[in-house]
Amino acid sequence: MKKRTTREITIGNIILGNNNPIAVQSMAATKTTDVDRTISQINSLHDAGADIVRIAIDSKKDCAALSIIRNATQVALSADLQENYRILKDIAPYIDKVRYNPGHLHHHEKNKSIAYKVENIASIAAKYNLAIRIGVNCGSVDPVLKEKFSDDVQAMVESARQHCEILENIGFRNYLVSLKDSDYNKVIRANKLFHDMMPEIPIHLGVTEAGMPPEGIIKTRIAFEQLIPIGIGDTIRVSLTLPFEEKKQEIYAGKNILKDITEGRFRSVPTLFNEKINIISCPSCSRVENEVFIDLAKDVKKLTQKMDKKLTIAIMGCRVNGPGETDDADIGLWCGPSGVNLKLKTKLIGHFKYNLILKKVEDIINSY
Image (cartoon, rainbow, N blue to C red; front, side, top):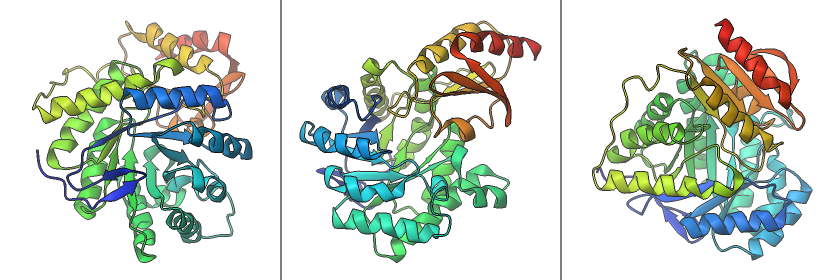
């Protein structure tokens, strides 16, 4: 394998980058405010070998829960700010790393510049010795860049470059970047382009919304096998749609892929892997608004297994990923607390109860 050339950064007691071991991480699926279940899941992931565990923080109640969770866990903790960057000042003492999505920074305080918001995040991170992940997702790229570039991969890479430039200009170096999509080909291309442009910046690899096993593992493996051997990737996440109690399977899958790559075992890709219905579903995490979402994803997979059609169906479990991440799918299911928003490409068809949506999806597929 080619030696990695990225600079070292620290996340708690973890050192990433350069030739340090590739760290494996996951995300808690429980509600952060459900303190006992969240502690149990974080510790389960740590026991399975997770180096870093991410949790979603979106409210004052989440902040209060985090202070308790921190005292009951030893693993490096990363917080996902979602859309509220201002909450970082309340949680910084309890975490080791913060992830923000550049595409979400425009949602609040529209009168303040993106640079101002990033500098605010960086100043707090510097004060508390936190690492930052610039987490770019293809489905939620900054709308200004989406308008500028016809190629969404180029938009994603440019978004990452701009945010790196902001941090570099203020002297903040303890950061890494992720460029994710549900299409492993875009993940491969985006990470190669970014690494060629900024080879010193550590990279978090992952195929977002990869779906359920085994397909989700296959998609992720393809991306990792194309990138890690050429020196791209300092930490990884395998994002799978799983029952909450089975989240540690993400860690096992990640470690198995890394072991195979290290030992030179590469798996062939079935020729017809992309010539069937492709189900994209987000990893079950604490943003999920109704756990029935996981059952729905399984039911859609079962429904479509023997269907001979080439379609993409996206099943998203929350309001953060739902609206944007379903836009490129032929059929999009954006799950809420009591029902499912059904989309055809970008067009919203309607809102349906969970017990009615599967038949509606079946009718639409049969009409293709």
